[in-house]
Image (cartoon, rainbow, N blue to C red; front, top):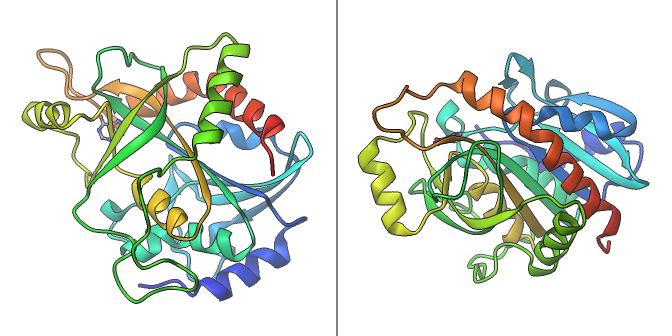
Length: 271
Ligand code: HPA
């Protein structure tokens, strides 16, 4: 299935109160952040032509548009994953639609398994680099719009926004790690052998999203900032197994800190 980006953008634009500057994508367990928006207008994914209706923790995916501290933002609660059977162009469609609306900055969040020792439950890692271990690219296929064919990925995540995030975290006296996120195809969680491999590769955290979106955003020249909320340790040995319920529960608790951080970044970033 493919999404007609122009048609989706037109439908969304008609429903939006202002032209958003920032797209904020909320990962599992982080949807509480949508409450931050002032004068919120809700747009269910079902109202956007071509979007599959996806369920996030039992709720349909939706956009919430409005302002955070005066800045017009578009919040996307819920995303499309390739493990749901969606083609990569569906996974990346919301980024292309945001670009078509004139959004210049994308903030991606996700829940991820911690691999690096210091990444404890509920901690937040700013993603400063990534590895695509999904073995396919959201950019494969005919060129779309203004996308670059061979985008440079030597700095996938915006350095200035990262420096600002570190500053905001210091001001909030909030610990903020930074590291490399590995995207795997999922949907099974990793085996212990896979976690050893990821560690050997240099991954600090592992998840099943974000990389396709960041890649397409870079190909469109958008600024990208991304955070992982560590919802669990990847493949614990000898302990209990891992469940999606646990991922959601930790997300709910840690989202308050991540909310404060993102809000501080939005307040202070240059347009
Ligand atoms: N592995 C992969 N994806 C995840 C995990 C994990 O441990 N936790 C949340 N998303």
